[in-house]
Length: 359
Ligand code: GTP
Image (tube, rainbow, N blue to C red; front, side, top):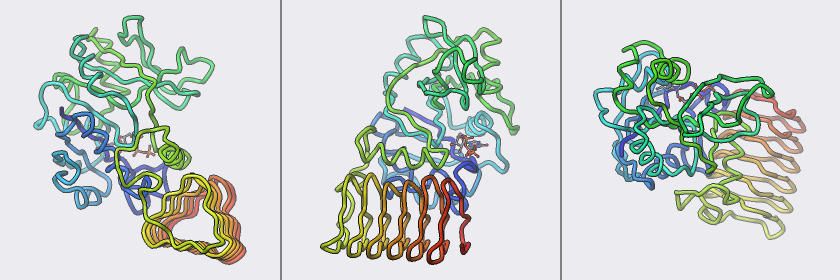
């Protein structure tokens, strides 16, 4: 089966993690997010994938090439300026025919794609939209359906109490190539706002594929941490052998250091005397946690150094960042790459620290 992956966005909500890289390449359990997504797609028989690029395009092609190392065939289509979700797929039209998947490139899920494609073919839809339940739909596109699954209405970001359902557009579609006739060439256009409502207005058959399978979009720092907690706790299947607790390397642990819960270490990590690492947590290659520090549910990128007696909790620490002795990094903080947090400093809850700064 064929898919188009949308990975051209700037990932602004994930900054500062996306200042030096694209959302699709941020590390999830020490592997680029896209490696997880490709492994999932391959395991569901999606092996011919067109990747639509815009922001920092060389970051992806340079690493994944023709996709053979991931068991899929990858081709790339570039946008000079962002064309939006539908404009990006229109740009890839010469490579598309029949029915194909479109995937937002920031989603991790266990949705059964073969079942979704079968449903699309049986229902006679021109577009099938996967739906997933969320607790609070007010930040999403809500999709109202008839009892037979046909889509009745799209409601963008409704106030919570006005949403008729908590089923939202999961950012996974099966489309017939004919849908692209409705998308202007070379102009920004969105499926959610223009193309799908246009299909409904024209009376075209648009169906929903509701599912309660695992689904998360990694578009915010909290979700970026959450997906890794979920993978480490087995709430979502990992399709990458190396990205599992115990699938990483063994750290150099001082005999008095303690590791509790699922923790994934990259290569060459060193944990000092009396330090405590509490999972779910991830440490990238070459991380050092010095004596007496506490790392609790943190995601720490390659080459970071946590000083003596520091506390790093429920947060993300960028690559090559140094957290000085006695520092406290509070819950929800996001510290970018190559930051120096000087001795005794505190990074407040939810604070974002831009790369290459000294605090
Ligand atoms: P934010 O800036 O944080 O909203 O992130 P984003 O724009 O990267 O992602 P958003 O959730 O808005 O978009 C969903 C998916 O579509 C992401 O995987 C994006 O990479 C992708 N996307 C968004 N806009 C474009 C675009 O203009 N072109 C392409 N090729 N992909 C896009």
